[in-house]
Length: 73
Image (cartoon, rainbow, N blue to C red):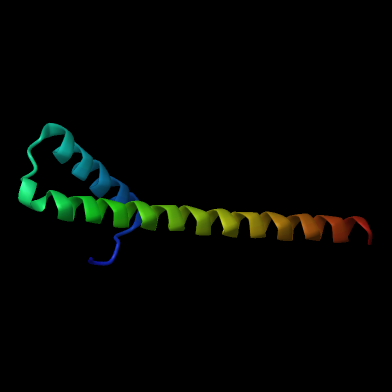
């Protein structure tokens, strides 16, 4: 599998694959590869969202810690 594109591009590619499958324009011979690519992109997007969520939580914790430390000065 090739590397994943950016998050937005990955979502657009997943949507395109879903459209192809729903419209039945996808060739049966390439269906398996499309499904594998979609699964890869979904996993990539989930990881990206988790990482972003973790980063946001860390920033908020740091801000909260600074607020608490500032209140005791």
